[in-house]
Amino acid sequence: MTTTTATDTATPTPGAASLLQLNDDVLALIIWHLNVYQQYELGRLHRRLESIVQMLWRTRVRNVALHDEMFKRSSPNSRQFLAFVLTLAPHMQRLSCQQLDVRRLRLLSSHTLSGVTSLEWLGDGHRRGRARFVDEDVRLLRRVFPSLRKLKLRGCQITGKYLCDLELLSELCLDDCQYLESQHFRDLFRQLKLRKFDIMEDCDEVNCCDLVDLQLCPTLEHIKIADYHLCMESDITQQLLQLPRLNKLSIYSKNFVFDVLSRIARPSYPTGGARLIEGFRFSGILHDYERFFRELGNLRNLRRLEMHGHGEEDGQLQCLGDQMLRQLSTTLPELTELHLCGYQLESPLGLLGFVTHCRSLRVLDITRTRCHGDAFVWSCLNILAKQRWRTQPLELWIRKSDIKPEITESPRLLDNEKHIKIDCKQLPNSQDHTSGVLKFSFAR
Image 1 (cartoon, rainbow, N blue to C red):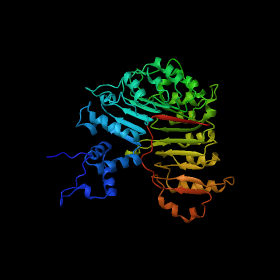
Image 2: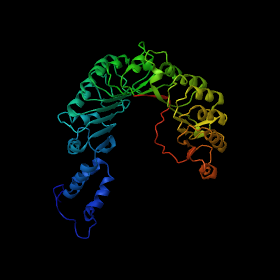
Image 3: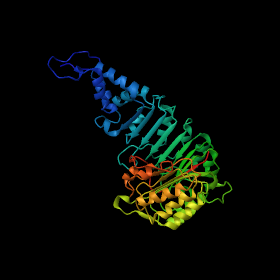
Image 4: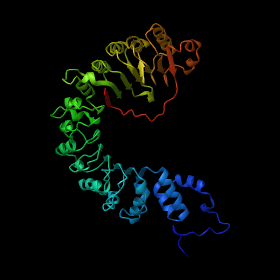
């Protein structure tokens, strides 16, 4: 019996069913539904299949995700894996390795994949019996991926001492890397021109890295950290607010939400922190909204406020009182967008305060919020009809609220389209509303 290889051009036996009886377009559709390693294995069986796989890789393969399960039939030191990666390399730009055995990565140590600019290594640092991704593997990355600009490491046992050698890096994310040492961050921030730095899930309060040297990286535009990074001996709040290009700041907090907000929002810093902030978003459950709103009131130039409550799945929406909402509306006169999603309102009066006091309000989003039904819409319309300074209608988003979608067909609303426009379309569930994260955006 002879073995069929990619060099064989033999035709199938007459009368036998074969994939090769299909035309190239149909074959391409079938092959595209296989994972990238299955495509490679199929291409090795016949030249025609290999040609179709290469065509798909040239035109469609830019982002590649490799899972450990793809290679469960081959050993971590398999030469076939090496041949596969080298064949795929000319087409890759972004590579994601998910729980891959690090010994497979080390097979590439004497090769260069210069086309890859983005790498994710999502390891499982808690899995026993596995070789760990360590500092020497970071040095390997520099040799194998010399064009690397974006790097995300998760579950790695690195100290961080070789990260500064990745000279072209502009985005760095370190998740669940519990062996990081603060002493190595000085060289990291001084030598790299990072635009984005994410260490929000780096470790815990015990093994927390001191980020006092963040100020040495003036190119930073987006920073993601945890509340305990602000609570070290060195308070880095002022350094963060002084970074010249900072555009977004995300801070994860379990127990210190009020403290974090007060550090950023209160205008007592020399930098004038409150002057810089134009957007704020929070998703989660709070035990004291009145205190939270008082702190928000210090952001007097805020233009976009977005808050997402939790608990609507079991019908337990948190209630927001009229007094706290009306007081907040008087302290944020510059608001153009208000997203108050997933809450129970004491009455419509609190929310109507924003329509009255925020003269530039363009979007009012009450998705999943209980605002006492259609009566809110008519009260809102009565206020808007008297605001002659408005040049465009207020957009009211009522998705999954207690306002009936049929209200959009009301003749009264159709006659007042210059005042109010209602949107009841459903949003996809892919939006990121990570619980407990305070997100600030700054004016450029």
